[in-house]
Each structure stands twice: as structure tokens, then as C-alpha cells.
Image (tube, rainbow, N blue to C red; front, top):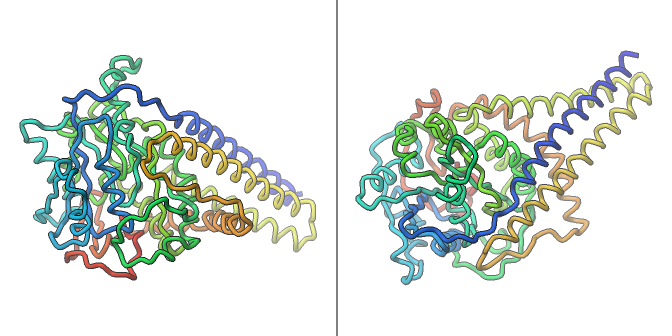
Length: 455
């Protein structure tokens, strides 16, 4: 009798858990419908786009070119390296000369070891630009490993546009916006070949990677949470210059490890809102091992643990999911020993039902993402990677199950982490605002390095 009650309780908990997730996903999918880019930006409202680089990502040239070809917004791209001999510099020098007026390269002055190099770089250049006479009205931030559309910047700034601020019924104005990352599940055939920037071969770029599939499923599940908790992603976000100058974020960066998830705290404390820019997705694909994907997920969760007030809910989500699966496993073993086939059947069917539910969730978010990407203006689009082959279905099913194991493990690791590495640089975490850089050397290209070592 007790076993049957436990089995029924598990079914109820899985049902409630699935219902809550379904509501959150439905809200996210409805919100992410892209807006029509109908109003060009006023020429006087310029935007500075900041990108801190260390090393050359596989598609860095194509990424830089996409950022330099933004439409309908007055902008200038500021590229920041910590050494004039960084491999990224050689890629930057390959950019077309007719676009040279749209970018400036800065070499970081490493005058502090109490924050990450990325935080230091962004804080230094942002402060310089804020002191200029013709300073920009907006700041946008991007990473070197994500492909953006030509209307990425317009769509990212659109929620902060003057016509939207005036027509909004909200009592607070939008002070910052964020886009979302979209990691592809499988490699895709590219319509053009960018210049080679790393020792990575074409075969490696086109291989099916179980680690990439795990990262895809985890990231897919994280998107509704990021929207719900107003989590800013460092690879695609923007902020008003006046908010950045006075909200205290620049001072925080000089003591922090990560720059992005803490944005919400400072913007809201200054009396403004953080908004997700509808339809703004930045896509990427890189093959990696499962262990590297686990470390990458752990770093994302570490960022949340250190600087975002909603980490406890993310940790609860991971812990509750792990507890439910552990209970199902325990009840299944117990029922098998007692030959209680009814209870065994109930828990197995409930687990299969939850996996089916997750597939439905996956399909809805995938369709939403593909619709968003189809509405964005990519000059050289990437062919859709899903082919529906038996091999892809097998790899996707394997990755989905593995992700549900990796997620709780990565959460525990994020809670226990006290040191972290970023492309050859190691940091010690004494507290969220007590960071110690333990070493420094200019980046050296290493063919064996895992690109997922990015923060």
C-alpha cells in the first residue's frame, strides 16, 4: 500500500512540475515573436558595441563582419584585446578596408588583478567612451563566438527606443535589454567559407558532437527561465549610457568575475526595467566533449550563483528534477523486488510521460527559435541542420537523457566551485566581489584547447 501511494505521489509531482514548466514555456514562446523593423534609428542616437576578445574563435572573422554590417543604427564597434600579439588581432586585420571607419581596437591596460580580464576590459573602454564629448547614447555588448543578423542591433535597442518608452503603460522605463543564445544541435552546411582562423579542421567543424547536443538541450531549457528571471546574457545585451554611468555597474565590474547576470540588480535598483528583446537570437555551433559541456554549464550556473538573486530557484529546479528521478529509480527497484508490477508500471509510465512532455516542450521552443531566426536578416544564412535521420534521432534522444544527468551535477559543481579558468587565466573566488586573478600570460593558440573554456 505504501509503495502504491509513493508511486501515485511521484505521478502527481511530475504532473505539477510539467504543468508549471508548460506555462512558463508558453509565455516565453508567445513573447519571443519578432517585432517588425519598421522605424529606422535617429542618427543622433548612436551606439557603442563593445566586444572583449582573447584568442580567435573558429568563426571570428564572420562574427566581426556580421557586427560591422548592422543596419538602421548609427554604431561603432570597439574590439578589446589584452595583448597586441593576441591571435584575434590577425583576424581583425583581415577585415575589409571599406569598413575600417566602423571599428576601433583597444589594448587592455592590465592594472588590476581583482576582477576578470573581460570585466576589466569592458569597464575601461566604457569609462573612456562616457568621458568623450560625443559619447554614445547606448552601449551594446557582444561575444566573438556568436553569429548575429544584420538587424541584431536595431532589434536589441528597439525596446529602449524613445517611441516605445513614451507609449509604454509601465511606470518604469526600459534601461537595459538582452537577447538570447541559440546553440545548434547538429552541424550545418555553410553557404560560404570564412577565412580559417584556428587549427580546427573542416571535418571537426562538421562532426556530430554529443557535448554540443547536451549544451543545446540545456540551453534550450534555460531560455524560458532566463526570460522569467530577466537574466541578461553577456553575448547580446544593451544598456542606456545614462543608466550605465550612474547605476554602479562599472564599479561592480572592477571587482567581479562575470559582467552580465548582475546587470538586472543594478538596473532595477536605479529604477529601470530589464527587458528581453523579442526574437533576438544569436546562433552558434561548436563541437565539444561532454566533460567540456558540463564545465560550460557549470560556469553559467556559477555566474547565476554569484550575481543573480534567482539562483535559488534554478538550484531548486535542478535538485527537484534529480530528486524525482532518484525517487522513480528507487520505487522501480523496490517494486521489482516485491514484484509489485502495478507500482512499477505506474512509475515507468510516468517517467516516459515526462520524457514525452519534454519532447513537446523541445519541439515548441525549437519551432519558436526557427521562426525567430527565419525573421532575422542574415546576409549569409546557415542551412537548417536537422535532417530527421535515424542517426540524428538517436543522438538527440541520447543527449536529452544525458542532459538530465549533467544538469544536477553541474549545479552542485557550481555551488562548490572556488576557482575557475578562462582561456589560460585562473581566478580564485573568495566571495562574489572578492576575486583574485592568479596568473597572466598572452593567449597562445593551442590546437587542443577546448573553445568552451569561454566564460
